[in-house]
Length: 213
Length: 205
Image 1: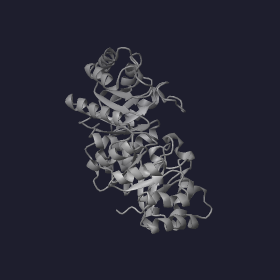
Image 2: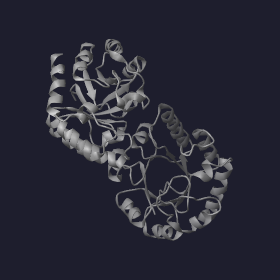
Image 3: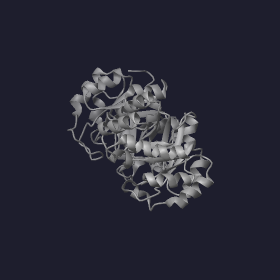
Image 4: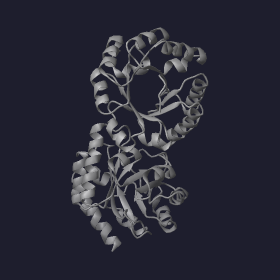
């Protein structure tokens, strides 16, 4: 694993869908208070000016507390806001194209749901892999079954880049995810849909920290 | 890069194969400005399609602009990016890539003025007439609004929306720099005749 791993610990996926109870920026601030280690902003569809302004705020806030902020899918938004990088799914722009546009210093993450996809992402120059979905999840409508902990463990063993587990992870199952050898844990609804996102973040963070010590 | 005044906009309801075939046919018959506009495609598929259209348009030295996705415009080395009036400001694009031609689709006089203030290189204004593909953008603006916009703006104005051959002349007389169309290129069974007829009107101005 790389020594300058910027995708370690608790990774929050701030998704506009389903619509969170709190405004995006407030949610980010709550998670930062709860000591989140990195954030991914995810919005499918057009970026309005309001949304672009929100991303600019998120970039500023994350820079202040020195945590990475990556943008899902939209390389142009990442470039225009000078975010830390992008997170690309299997139907988004290819990694090689993204690397050419973003340069060597920006973070590029890739979603994988099989070992083969994860290895290919590593080969094509991803800085980290988001592997999942580990457990059943309602956040996104899934056409495939969960990959489970056995597959996660194998990916963690075979990859040299950091692996961030995603999908249906909450305070109850985060322990076993950590024990599979991940570098980070990505959380969507367990924070975004929580009535107390700061506390939810802090709880998850302390379990993750206990595992990594 | 120079943007010739007859713009083909791809049909949002068409698939990649259909789009490639229409654009190929159009370029073979003299169209030299193409806007790729696909709102429902994932980035990877859009990028693949944009790559194809870039190769095609390069062969004909035609102008290619990509609707909405600046990253894909950059990735395929398109000549321009085309924004909706609700999208990012043209300033954001110009800051990242000054050489890219930035167009904005506008549906009111105010929005056309704002696009110019924000650094757009041209606007597309419409719908001028009734057309199924532009119903979502409100009632037709008509020739008189078009004329108002062309008089107020110093950048080129391209008229869009249900423009037939006969009406093309009226749009140009109202000061439009060019004409954009989707349906006229999709529905025609004689591309050469379609392009020539439009081109004749454009050449007259």
